[in-house]
Length: 254
Image: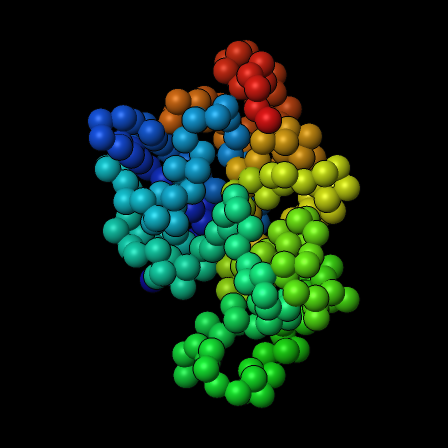
């Protein structure tokens, strides 16, 4: 099936998710355009992470339809969605602390080996992945730290390593769940620049509470409140929306 390159890479239509009668996401319509950085923002409890879980199929929608690259993925398993090119990060850094940065990326790259994962084989078997692993570490500014244990890296550098392992899966759509959470000012600036750099040839959908980051990084913003879309547009457009000011900007979003 041919895919219209002008069509959104991810579409959600009338998507609803309920948990024991509680409506977490209510009849959501969302378009994520190719080649953009699209931010999903809103107060705590607005349903942002639930939308991520629905898109990547960690949750199945109660009703509605989800398409990725023109394919209906409403009932698709999370592993298959990842193989199609939609990959996400999580709020909590997920790396192997006792392994080096290079080894962490190499594990992610094993996905492309035809003989499946090679955890119990000689390390020499995996050296063919070293060049690509170093390229990815260089892309996120970690090549000089490639031999450091992941558990020894500062928090911001561990999040960069997590991004490198995510990029190893060669995503077309990268979902970042609060990539700046817990970071100091210096790490926020470094990570924002990193996201801008890795988005050059990818689409990014991110949940982020730091409005300064959202303002300077995002091409398009969807504001959620109580599981519904409250406003959409550029930062300039949504930041002037009275409903957004009332429901989001005036709340404690840290």
